Image (cartoon, rainbow, N blue to C red; front, top):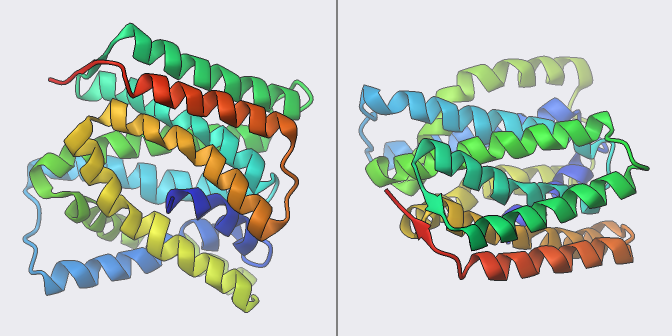
Amino acid sequence: MGFSLSLPAARVAVVELEPTIVGLGRSVVAAVLALFVLVITKQPIPPQRYWRGLIIAAFGVVLGFPLLSAWAMQRLPAAYGGVVIGLIPLATAIVATIRVRERPDRKFWSASFTGTGTILLFMAISGAGTLQIADLALIGAVVSAAIGYVEGAKLSAHLGSWQVICWALVIVAPITVIPVGLSIVQQGLQASPLSWAAFAYGSIFPQFLCFFAWYHGMHLGGIAKVGQLQLVQPFLTLFFSGIFLGETITPLMLVCAAIVITCVAVSRTAQVQRS
């Protein structure tokens, strides 16, 4: 639910704020919150053996996904982007198979590929048969999110779910603050209260608090299997885009979302061996 409002919020914010400020600026705000939480709870610095995974997770969900999705939202409707983001569960399952040796059965892969194929067909039809640069940015965001999800869920078993996202945010803060600062100097911070409210939502929820539950859930139930729940996100993003942005919800979007949600139900009954 929290993640599903990420693209509509970004769509509102980038109307008046530069994509770098929206995409990376929210991670700077979230890093301040994360540092505060780590300090008041007196969390020890993670052992060095976990830093590589933290950096990978940070580049996926703190840098890659927010920046690429914010850039794409300057050029695409949030409802369209919400359906494309439905590719994340398949990408997450593939990365989980490689990184943590989870082994989903054939039913799982059949459902996952069917849902993904539906989304790709939707992209092709909606884009007049060709992929646009903004589509490629969204696909890059999907890959970044999948890598960040798997690495974060893997580390949650050792560091704790909320500790993982907090440390990931703090680790890359020295990197993100530089382009954000330059963008502020060049573009300024003139925006309406609505844009700032959307920016605040992106900073506090999808970039910070939502990961507390998401990483913990993937650790408990398995990365690939729980990751399929995010196929529900297109439905929610379509709903919120229509309600808050007044975007047109086409019958094609609804049909694709219905097929995808059916694939979620099937994949939830599949068997996944966990190493």
